[in-house]
Image (cartoon, rainbow, N blue to C red; front, side):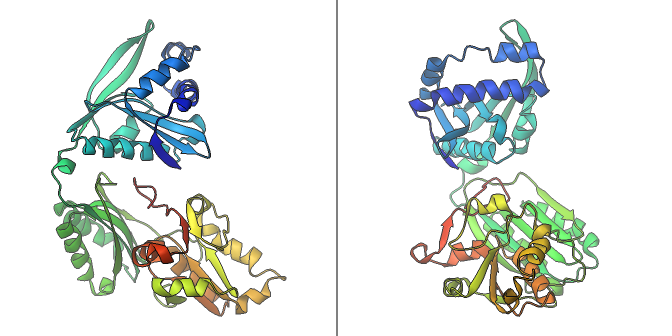
Length: 396
């Protein structure tokens, strides 16, 4: 998906997105009469071309198709902001908003404000906007409810250093995981940490963001627990915080797998350092498997890797059974298998499972794709595309 500035030839697609989204998505919150007044049948494509050219209009494009658009004015006003009716909840709005906020910071705009429909209220709330007022607006004789919302960007404009994003996981016996939730939450909030931390009987998994001092303090605090003293983390950097608050959640499993008695803290495959990964996967006798979900793979993967087409990670055992353990696939048990995922946690659990199934040589990328992208020079990288991440950044 490409986020770029508006071009005149985008006008017709943008007009149709505006019309179709209101008539098929916003109709959930507004009456047919209100929707028809808001988006009448006459699309006025020439007017859209003029309007979009006067503002910072960003479009999301994939394979020549416009998936959404958003407009920023020089006073900080976000005007139209619509995602294609067939691409709702696919990250389109998130990426458009990030482009708009980045431009606002570049222009030293302190305050963003927007009139938000009932339908879009939750989206803008989740991006840190607060409600100024609810109002009724007259549109071609119909009264429509919307909300004036605003967000202040002071904390970004005053910064001279980027935020630190730390990603980490560690398998360990945390039988008291529920008791850890409150102190970790309190400590993280005290140090202005945002993000998601998962706690389960089998360990911890997290992506958090904050200042350098805050991230270091949290990591030191967690490693003070003897069970987490060997916790390793990966870092990236960003100018805009990709989370709005800290959530510490309790889970039965760090990543849902659905197979009992798989303990990565006891036995896993062979860790492969990022610097050695290229040599391993370049061997034609090695079966390279991407253990991520299909929509993640679509953003990017390693050249030649197998895509198991998983909708969910807990489908991986079924994939192994049907493709690597079938009567015609016994040779795979003696074949070298190399697996990878975003941060390392899924392929670590998958490697423990495959060893339990009798596979003899199982390898996995230590630190996952994130560590590989961090350590391997771009000119040597075998990675193709972008890496999907589970926060507002969407991809790296």
